[in-house]
Image 1: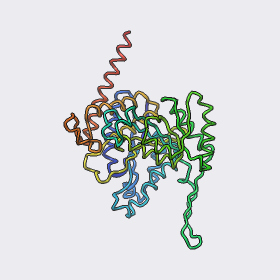
Image 2 (image 1 turned 90 degrees about the horizontal axis):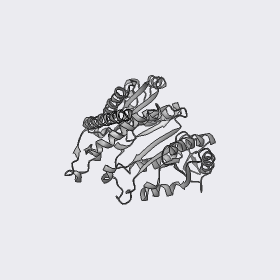
Image 3 (image 1 turned 120 degrees about the horizontal axis):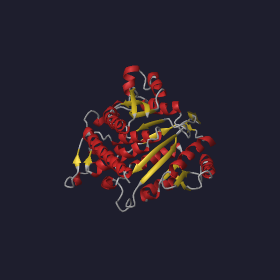
Length: 380
């Protein structure tokens, strides 16, 4: 397979973790016989310095000519957010990319690795049956893209944000969610606020209409306030969750806290045609940029999502994910996932490159085992 990938490292730790993800991608290309041409573009504060724009036309053209986008992170230091370089940086870059390419859905997996239970904020008794969730979030509707007004009425300030959903927007998210559930445990939870919101009533109605095309998938409804509570009380009950833009934004961040670090989270934003942007949700982490201590796992797992969803390379994606889990099982930890109490338990505090080295080592082992298994089957 030959594919072109637009690589946008962005700001802060973006370039550091992206470099390690590209090492993994290069390994996969060599082992599985693919050709991935990566072309780097600028975005965020890095682009503003060079072009005076957070998302220059050159970057849009690069993305348009590519088969997928591998995105790092954007945004500046908290104490510099007032500077022109950083004002509306996220809105002008990542949100603008979503709008330009009409990324209709976002996939956010949230998994607690068996060897990482100790850093989850939840008690072991709560997560004993395991946590492995995918949140499917609609990305083009809701108050994010509705009309926004601020005005005065009777001498008092008033602000309004219009939330709107179309039948087609809900259908797109629902189909994506049902297809995802069909590949997993065949259980889908649709989250809304249908007891109050008209948009949620439409949401629930359309989801159940789409469900008629997926009779093998069990679907249930849950109000968003209850879902937020259940994610903390009993997250193991969920497999795939589908919800609106606003609720998805909130719930996916709540779910991201369950594994104990955003450094373990990946994200995919997809068009209806399957063109995708893949990014870690943790941000630019300017406070640790340049120190070589950032966790590259989120960027590496986002690369695995790219292989699976944009290129249909399931075995390659599985290999990366298995290697990450093996490296964690072997005790490698960057600072964000290092528990001081584990010092005497064979755990090793490592930096960005060392963590990637460990993953590449496990990836080599994984591929060797699979090759051996394949050779054994061939002789049967």
